[in-house]
Image (cartoon, rainbow, N blue to C red):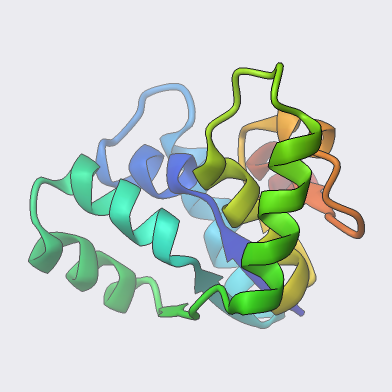
Length: 135
């Protein structure tokens, strides 16, 4: 089982979020026991912003044993097509790229953002930290 990790789950852990931090950490631990953890370039960029430096972000990813996997041309194209179909929505292109990356490089996307299912990326499986912890 390969799990793609979304930025909000990583930020919950690093920021010690009082509402979501524990569940996000337990979910990452559970996902790691089931298989590999991966992140996309967009997640790395967003996470680095939240950490304030690339070194801190990379150190955290290393501690959590999360691997970087490039998005690739097919997933990037699929993300762009889905974004074009949903222009009226307020979602940013990075969200479409994260979702398409998860479809091509993982079995599921671990995120607190349930709205990823509305992006129109065929084959996307979304799981929340609370679902992982209660499973």
